[in-house]
Length: 295
Image 1: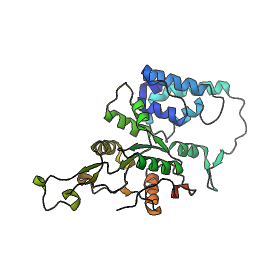
Image 2: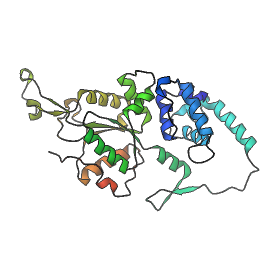
Image 3: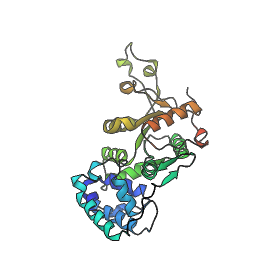
Image 4: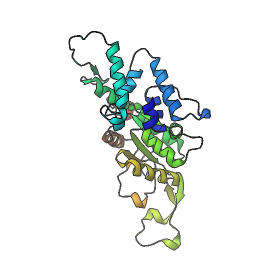
C-alpha cells in the first residue's frame, strides 16, 4: 500500500483496479494515491481465493509483466514489502511438503500448456488505449474487432480518471492512457476536410494536398504525436476510410483497416509485435466490425 502510494502514479493504480476488477472510488471525492491504494488492497484482501486476490496483486506487481523495477524483489524500494511478506508467509505456512511440479494451464484454443507466471503475464497484456476522433461507427467497429481478439479497451474516461485531479490536462490523460495500456491504437478517420491554401501550393505537393480531402482531426494528430513520444514501440497507426496522409509522419507504416482478411491480419501482426496477448485462435475476428473498403 505504502509502496504503491510512494512509487506508482494515479494511472498505474487505476490500471491495477481494471486488471483486478475492483470498483473505482467515486471521482467526486478526488481520492489521492494513498486512498486509492488502500481501497485496492482492502478490496482484494476480502477475496478468499482466485486470480484476483491480494497475493495475486503482489505477484503481479513484482513480475516482469508489470515492467516497473521498483516493485520487483531485490530492489531497495520494495525491500520492506518483501521482508514483511516473507515473514508473514513463514508464520502462516504449514510444514514443508514434497516438491511438486509447477502448475500448468491450457490456454483456450491451444493444445499446449503454459507455466502459471506465463499465463498471468498473458492475461494481463491485453489492454489497448485508443486515440480517436468523432467517427463513432469506426470506433465501434474497431472495438468489436478488438473484443473478438480478447483485448480490452482503456477508454478516454479510464485514462482521465487515471490522470488524477478534477480537470486533468489532455497531455496527462494521454500519458495515463499509455501508462495503463500495453499498446496504443491511433484511429485516424476523415472527420475533417482540408487542403493547402493556393498561396502556399508548390510543385512537390501531392494531389491530396491540392483539393479538399478528408483528414484526421487535429487533436488526434497531436495526441498521436504525444503517444509516440512516450512509447513509439507500442503505438499502432490505423486508418479507416479515405484519410489524407500526414506529411510529417507519412514515412511511418499505417494499417489501412478495411473489411478484408489481409488488413485484419496486418493489424493482428502489429498488435502481437507490441507483445499483446492477442487470441486469434477462433473465427470471430474475421467478421467482427464493419469497415469501409479502401478507396
